[in-house]
Structures are given as C-alpha cells and as structure tokens.
Length: 154
Image (cartoon, rainbow, N blue to C red; front, side, top):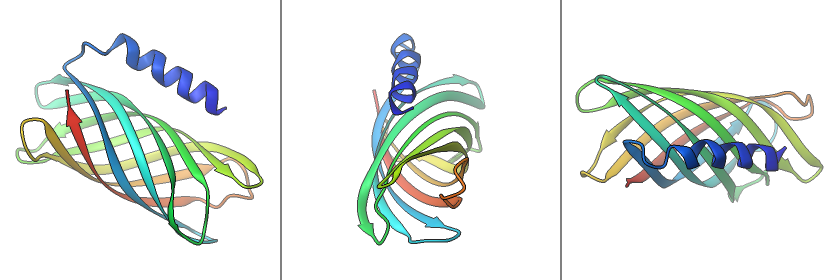
C-alpha cells in the first residue's frame, strides 16, 4: 500500500510542478489515539496548490516518523485540500488516505482535517491543523493529530 500511495502522489505532483504554488515543509504532530499510547511525530510534507480568487485547492503527500512518546509507528498520508481566504488567514479542509507502519504490520484508512494557514513571509507559510485518521483495521484505534508546521513556497 505504501508504494501505491507514494507512487500516486508523485504522479499527481509531477504533472503539476509548474502550478501556481509548489511547496515543501515540515511539521510537528502530536497523535492522540482514543485508546492506546500517544506519540509525537516529525512529518515531511510536499504539495501543490492552485488558486481561484478567494478559493484554493490542491494535493499533498506526507511521511511522518516517531519523535517521542510511548507509541512507535510511522505515518503516510495522501490528501486533497481546499481553502478559503479570510484575509490574514486561510481556512483549510482536507481529506485523503492514511497508512500506519506498525510493529505488527500496517493499517490503512482515511483521514479528514481542518485548520488554518497564514503567510509568515512571501515564501514561508505557517499552518495549524487537526487531522482525524479513521483506520479500517480494528486493532488500530482512531487517532486525532494536532499539527503545527512551516512550509517553503517555490
């Protein structure tokens, strides 16, 4: 599944590299499951965005790795997103597919997210977001992730 997610993401991003806003960045994630142990992850994120006046849309791919806490699993997400410009910040919604790399194998599911994003400089954007992963595997609890991140816009 991981190969399919990454392959689809690179294929989607490769054709859109000349779009209005190609970006890459990093985020610090705090994952809080409904049952089980919490963990902190560091995530690398790349994506592409298109603007339509007040509205924006795009896609992004991310890979996250364990940085602390009692749980120890990696994450991969492929997400589509939409945004609405509120002036100094933009409201964001997102959804896509998720894969967790667990010690006992992997678990797949989908994710939904909501957050805000603001420009720090002409090239740097800051983001705060909540992401909810709904996993198909019953052995993995649903996880809510709180994210803060910074992105460089090419």
